[in-house]
Length: 379
Image 1 (cartoon, rainbow, N blue to C red):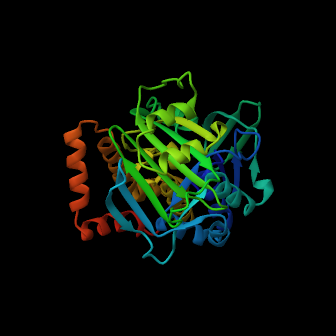
Image 2 (tube, rainbow, N blue to C red):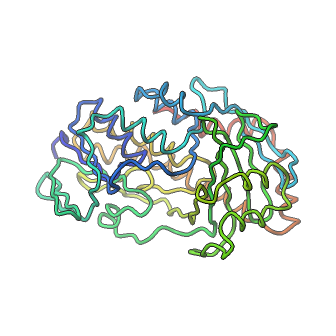
Image 3 (spheres, rainbow, N blue to C red):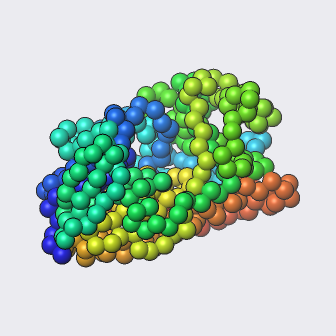
């Protein structure tokens, strides 16, 4: 199979946009097709650890990103009552860890790509392989042909569905709420992520730049469970009314319209996710729970690896190499994210007490090795 010159990416999220930017810089003729009619301005915060900001530096957008984000020096875990259980320094790498609003990162990636490289309002319908080409059909009736197709269309990827036919992602028993407010508690340390672990639920918050606070909740729930009749905000206020401050005040200071809710899913890591001149990227390839904050980071890593592989080999071999290089790491992160989520589901008081003792006694070198395994990775 010949080396790809024209590449189509389906999905213009963080992974798709970053991949388009990397491929454009490398000289490929790349086009991105995104189903939404315009760049979304809503969304939640996203953590970008050193492994991800290293990618942004390679893409030439790190300085723009730093100006719209919050530098993070420490990640702190606490009990429901506020007792510190564990504190991890994350500022010892050559590039910083940051938190940013997802829409801000998205906009930065897009504005560094020529406007004629992306098309909005085009929902992917199906593909067909025609010789060495891929013909891509969209719901609007538009048909385009390329040398390669990259599916970066997220958790419920339609490209994956046709390519692999391996069913729906797995619901893991957790629902997440995400809130955004301009209220900043007076005692909050701006360069710190703080998480609080309780009985079957957790609460975390962090600054994300532009004087905004992002907070998030994960709690056990049945799949598709509807909002309470009293509304999301009141439901959360009742859920966390006896937790330590500033948790109740953060919820109280957030407009209900700025509270999002989503069930949490992943997949069991499997290969292959590539066939011939078609591959998957980001959540389409290896969806993960947000427990380790590595979802967007893995998509950014994918962008650089797939580009380097396409520069070195013909399309089929490049996609095989890309998958081979990415599988072990993404599998580790998906599995460890699931294990961390299961720890957060504990409701038994004795089990929670044991978890707290374990976290307080965990040796510093073990914690540092864990941080390094995630953040010292370079592509």
